View 1 (cartoon, rainbow, N blue to C red):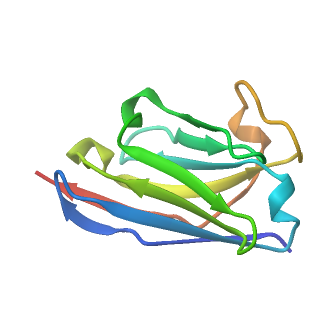
View 2: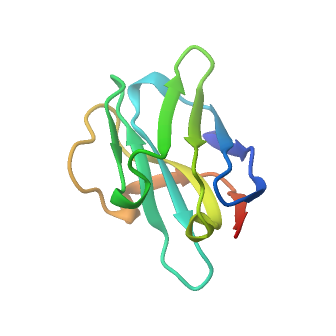
Length: 126
């Protein structure tokens, strides 16, 4: 079955960096777009970054220029490099996969994300 397993979270001071990873299994990884989401305490889960099957990337405005999403189709892994971290980046970070393969342009409803990882905690102190 499909599994997504995140790793790499932790605690860091403001201005620091972390690299999150997501290991995917149970499906043909290369033909699906992948996303990173995050959820801070008391807030709704929000999209952070997306990477298409051909490597195109999109980011939330709050992380542009600081975060970089990437994928390794040979290893079935997804990464999120987070630099210049701020206290407001504190959240649980999740990788997620939508229901359909192929194109993933435009807005996608959270309900269309069929698979989620268990999440990894990122804490940024000031």
